[in-house]
Image (tube, rainbow, N blue to C red; front, side, top):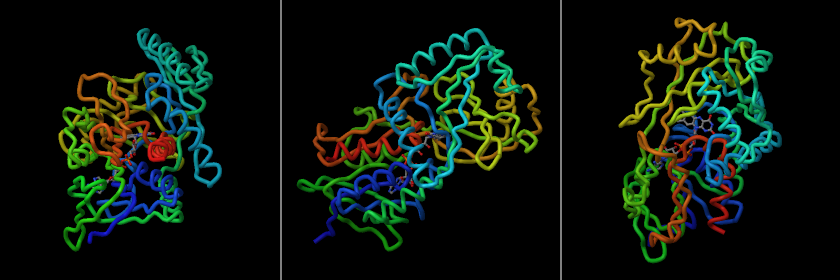
Length: 370
Ligand SMILES: Cc1cc2nc3c(=O)[nH]c(=O)nc-3n(C[C@H](O)[C@H](O)[C@H](O)COP(=O)(O)OP(=O)(O)OC[C@H]3O[C@@H](n4cnc5c(N)ncnc54)[C@H](O)[C@@H]3O)c2cc1C
């Protein structure tokens, strides 16, 4: 007889951790399988740690709804559990006439998404708030901020365990098949290959989530689940730039990313990034030849910046459903009953604002399973 469990969660990034915490409180026997030696070593620790307001995404999309809900839940959780954050606010800046028109569209989009505190700023108003920024206009989002994402991951891990969830590290899910009304799941760990049976499988495998869906028998090309990797690099700025700016400063968004922004972390360090370009494989090295492009991008709104003050820092990879040149794609958070796979819940394409939305996403999964 194979070992039997109620729920298998695949992946211990922020989404798997939040989901484990959410579901374990329903007294189900929850196991989280993670291929790495610890939680949160992939995208959940390779991002900007920005709490997004929910401005950019089409109304009624999961990205818009879960970002706005997740932002409020996250600030509340940070307050209740002493997780450090700074609601610094953010200004999206326009440096041309066409970008100014884009700001107005973003303002309207944000309001449709129930982000009610946005303010359009004139050049003078931007200067008053941020004297070192050059812009033709700005859009102020007071509810945006930064937070200690590792503290969130640690908290979610601790509380999921307290509620009874069990974590199995260094263990990769390598195969899966429907077995009667359940799933037979194959794992590989240091001791080799073994199988178990689960009633419910929740796929939170981030950059591998399309592959896990395929293992379960879904035609991912047909379902539109094929992921495209989109890399984002960061450069750090010399410490003399500390306290030059008090808010997050973003350019007007690009087609695939929010644009290279200026961000001062809770530790005072200043980072520029992330860029956005599609790659075939996962490789986190930062290409130093991209330095000039970073410089040119930020120089437009921060004229004081000097090229030699930039140093390569880190990178992350977005699990994007939207391929190059394609239109907006929403998060996939779906119970695959219609695909003939009841009890399989897929979370695919959980790129930004996945960190902000994590608590709302896990509630959404909890509601699907209720
Ligand atoms: C450059 C960049 C900047 C970003 N900035 C922000 C931001 O400022 N604010 C924001 O809200 N969001 C941001 N995001 C998005 C956010 O980081 C992600 O949405 C979030 O971290 C996704 O979490 P996850 O748990 O889905 O994925 P991950 O953190 O990647 O976790 C998936 C886990 O699954 C495991 N896994 C994979 N395959 C298997 C398998 N076969 N068996 C077992 N385990 C497996 C992996 O090892 C991994 O630990 C950013 C993303 C990037 C790339």
